[in-house]
Length: 376
Image 1 (spheres, rainbow, N blue to C red):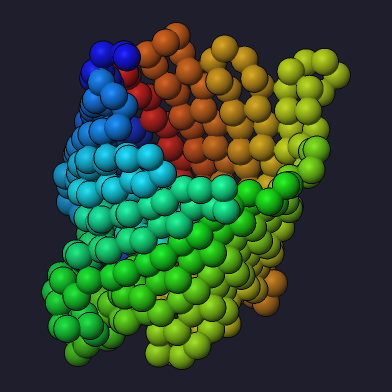
Image 2 (image 1 turned 180 degrees about the horizontal axis):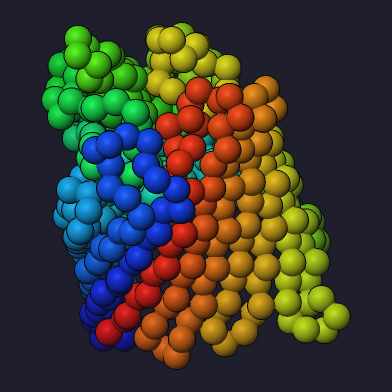
């Protein structure tokens, strides 16, 4: 039997943003934005490997945007495994989904939109999860006792909505954020297919905005029921993906993202892999009564380049185009390790509203970003 183990990783990151255009509103800052991030990942495993404890604090300090300076606990959980059963309690991050552009089935955590607006970063979620694994698949049951509100950039910040957001949110369920959510998920691999099914009842992570006198907006977190499917088919260089959600907030709607990824492996014996990605995004909610979603009839095209070198160099570029308005948003991301303890990340993000009312809030927020992370 191996000994109990503790693994610790600490990091400090310096991030520089440069906004190419002048801001839309006088209250916003111009040009550059510098921030720093402190984070740790502390993991303990018991001697018999049945118990695991994880703690991940996260602190960001931003010089220009008070709404982007905050502290969060991404993980603070204890899990215990007994044969085919596992129970996890505390604060955790859970990911569901298979697509690149958007994951409508990913419902457990609140998105951390002050980190980035691409819905990839998340706030830690208090939860209890009980799971059971067997030859017929994995079943997970979740109870979420406390709801995390979404964070927003301040009035001085960039990449924000064109209205002031009130700090006091409203909740449709029980009038507060302690009504409690429940979720069930089943997952299994069937040959070349990876399948996930879920059901959720609770509070929508995406708020509806109620406009008050004076032009301010109050976030309203509405009751949500949804069921969803995520499936991925893997065959050689092909990945075929789909996420389908049937949801009801004020109205009933469907949210679907489906597409493919085809990878050319080891181009000319160079170890370089190049992937081509195409996805279609659909959502038919009534945005007069339900939370805003800009991806109602859109196409995503992208490419992923992996050098498979010792520096783990990766490149990802993609663009989303609205089929109705022609509004576009795109990004280019690059990352590469420098030695064993430094990670360099570069990103460019751009917007072209082309008459799209929702994208117009970001039309002057094209941004270049560099981030250097030191691990110790």
